[in-house]
Image 1 (cartoon, rainbow, N blue to C red):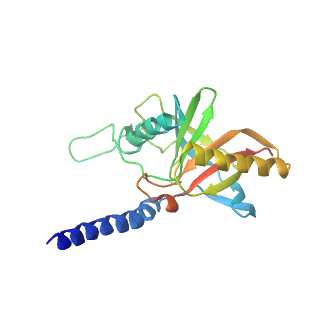
Image 2 (cartoon, helix red, strand yellow):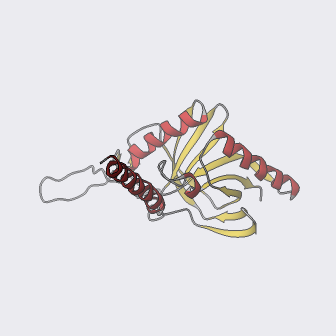
Image 3 (cartoon, helix red, strand yellow):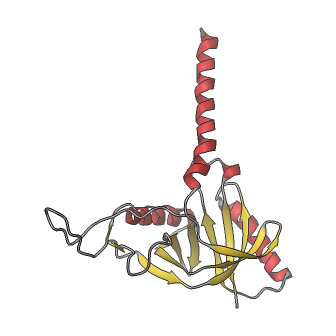
Amino acid sequence: MKKKKWMIIVGILGIIIIGAVLLGPVMSNVENPSYEVIQSDKKIEIRKYQPMIVAQVELEGNRKEAIQLGFRVLADYIFGSNTTEKDIAMTAPVEQESSQKIPMTAPVEQELSGNSWKIRFVMPKKYTLETLPKPKNPQIRILEIPEQTYVVIRFSGTASDRNIKVHETELMDYVKRENIPTVGSTKYAFYNPPWTLPFLKRNEVMIQEKT
C-alpha cells in the first residue's frame, strides 16, 4: 500500500516537473523586439534594434523589489488598466471610453537610473504612439525608442544578483577588450515566467554602443 502511495506521489511530481519544463517555453513564446545581429562572438552579440515603443515605470529600492513592483504596475496596465481614449460606437449604450488588454511581449527590461530603477515592457509592434491605449496609472510613461545598437550577453539560470553580476562583468570585459565605445549604463532583460526551470531561462545583460 505504501509502495503504491509513493508511486502515485512520484507520478504527480513527475507530471509537475514535465509541466514546468514544457509550460515555461510555451508561455515565453511571445512577441520579441526585432533586431539584426551585426556581430557574434560565442554568447555575446552586437545587435541593431529596430525602433520600439515601451511602457516604463521608475521605482526606488533594491533591484529585486523594484522589478517585482514594476512588473505588477506594468502588468496591471497591459491587462486592462488603460483606455483607448477613442469613441467606440455600440448598439446600446454608446461608450466614449474602452479598456482593452495589450498582448504580453518579452523581455521585461530593468535599468539602473541614479538611485532608482527603470522597468519597461516592450509594446507589440502593431501599436503606434497614437493607437496605443493610454495608462490610467500616472507613474507609467509611454516612450518611443529610436533605432539603437547594443552589445548583449545571453545566459541562462536564475536572475540572481550574483548570476547577473558574473555576466555583466564578462560583458564589460569584452567591451573593453574590443575597444567598443558605449553610452549609458547596463540594462537587464528577462524573457521567461518565474516558474520556468533555470536552465531554460533566457536572461541578458546589454549596453548601448555609441554610434
